[in-house]
Length: 374
Image (cartoon, rainbow, N blue to C red; front, side, top):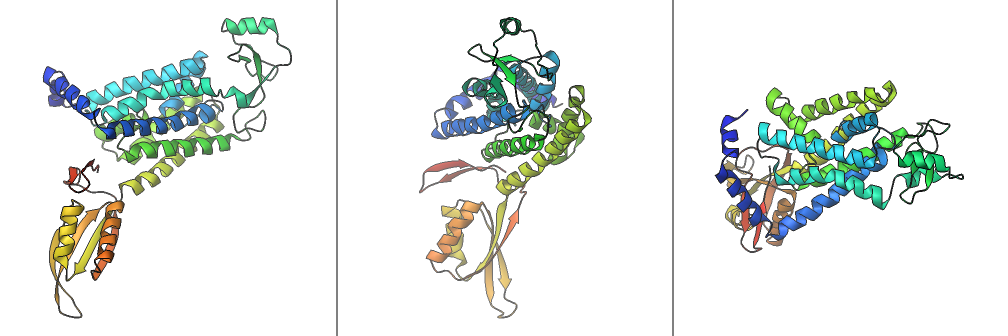
């Protein structure tokens, strides 16, 4: 634990500076754009949990999966589930600030705490029972009264009756949204739909340097104190959570959950690696000064110059090496074509950069302030 950081956190100056930074941020358009973007991403994440994870009782390595185990053990409903998710995320965020520091930032706090309320939102706007239940032909007053008293009543197939928001008695005809009927024949479809929706949610958040909290926090703690790489840390944390489902599921479902955790890691790694990729561009040209000026003044990037000699011609050239994002490389390529600059250019992908890449850029002509994240 970093004692210096903890001493700083418990000072008045630290919180005053934090509050001032937040007040400056909310005055920018970027703050509200990203707030809407994060909310949209978390809506997808909440939908993946509510429609595919909860009805099928799949326990994939996530805080939502752990919440399903706890909620099933205590016999809760969608409201209690969302409360459990919120409480666990709040606890993990507190642990993150104590053990890791403030690197997750306000974005992770926001996304982690809205997951529970957004699950309740889907439950009220479009309940999953619309796809898994039907109105009973006989509205038995005795059963309705028991359900109103929060007493669980099972049908002949061992499935619990539920009440709709209008007070009608519902019986279960499907065990999950993607199931054709009672039985577990379509659980793999639930798994695939959940993983794809969740991966889109996570990718959206990673694009703006945010995360959904929960499992990411556990993985980061494992990464920091046990020195595993972040991908292995996510697998370890997810696997441990999957194993908790032995309390409510059979061995087959646990294995399916572990497979889902593994697939989720692969899909997210694929997207996030693509987002983190930078272009390493090497340019050899006789008009090196013109290209250098464009890179420094227009793209606002540093570059490195090398004196090189052509092995065939024996002529002396300057090679420019620069690291760019995909969009910046596209701008550079358009510039070279527009100015008819003859170059010999090689381009490679680089997934990790260390040093001064993370910095605030001020682009004069566009008047844009942009924060580049490593």
